[in-house]
Image (cartoon, rainbow, N blue to C red):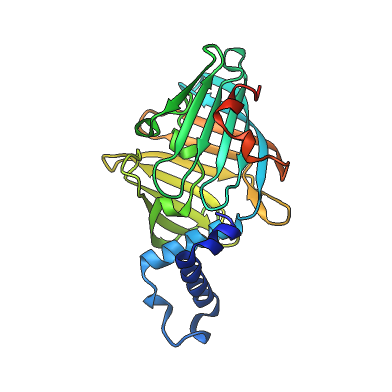
Length: 276
């Protein structure tokens, strides 16, 4: 995900550099027309460019409010914090801690995302003073009763999918690349995802999720992006709409902070019980 990571991946670095230069230079770079680039090559190049632009942030913290729309009128609010550590050579590590309501206070989820293979996740339940490992087979399940699955909230490493560029299509008037990505992990809850990435900053604007039967399950939209440290774009809001049960969940992000000094020792199982 980071520049450092890309630089350690010779294959992706070379491919991204070649395709990136080809896109920028167009006919002036080569007499070969742009149409020679295959849909998978272009899809991968877009994913790599988005990943590279978000590299090098080191660590972040952010406060979140989770709004669960359960029946169209009933809404439940939860408040939590998320800490994220960028990891050299692998996926990011993160901890999400619930602060409210009181019965969830101190509940925490630790995630080790991996570029290859299943992610590792643990759930800490303060009432039981117990850390429970979340099976990779359960990662498609709902996250704390929301319309987000556990796998939706782990970092989206490039290697976790194969890609196909589909078309250009605007979102709210902003030109976007539309790219299909297919999870490599057979335990994913999705057969495919269709993503909209804006062409100006390579920010994720929308994702359509298709279930194991190939039916449209959910749509996530992202809005209110702000740039930090003159490089890193983060959304103020993520909305997940479940088309099959009519429910929705909104995540509202506030007070992003970067490079706070988090280290690897802040992200282990023993840290889960201390983080309150």
